[in-house]
Image 1 (spheres, rainbow, N blue to C red):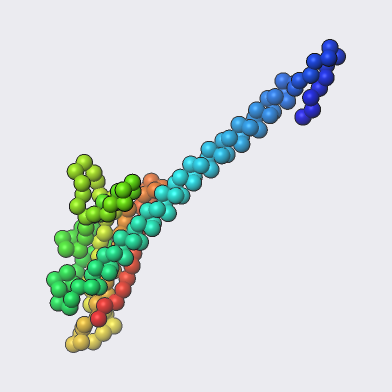
Image 2 (cartoon, rainbow, N blue to C red; image 1 turned 90 degrees about the vertical axis):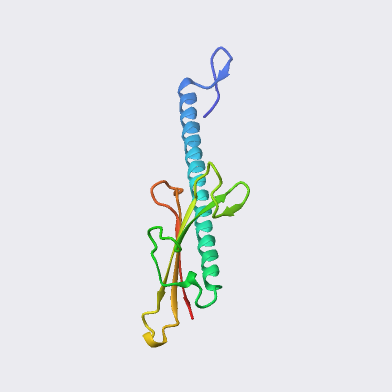
Amino acid sequence: MAIRQRSDGETGFTLVEVAIASAIIAGGLLFLANSFTLGMYQNKHIKQMTSAIALAQGKMEELRSLPSGDPGLALGGNLTGAITGYSDQVYVDDSGGTVTTTIPAGSRATYNRFWTVAADPDTDPAFATTQIITVRAAAVFGARGKYAEEATLVTERQ
């Protein structure tokens, strides 16, 4: 764009040039706003994935540390529904960093954890001391709305 000098000595932009410049600036601002919103969703998604992995690892370590014969290692459970002794709900307070299975009054659980303990199908039943432990942690509300972030871990325990 060039500043034009009119015949009466005044300078300035034409109305068409101002309209084009305004449209370019508006398009750029719209792109930035969209990028900012996408960044916020991505940040929440990564935060929830990291939390789901950490919660699954925590439960996995807890189960692996139980002594042999502990009732917490009884065969059973599933990865999709709440079964007493094989699932729990976790509240994570992002602002204070609190992680607890005791849901504070007026709050809702932010993650569900489910686990299974199964006999290893590849071992001889007479020597069935090997167990397969699977833990699934899933966010209650997904960062992208419809699909909740989740992590599933599997380990073998002898």
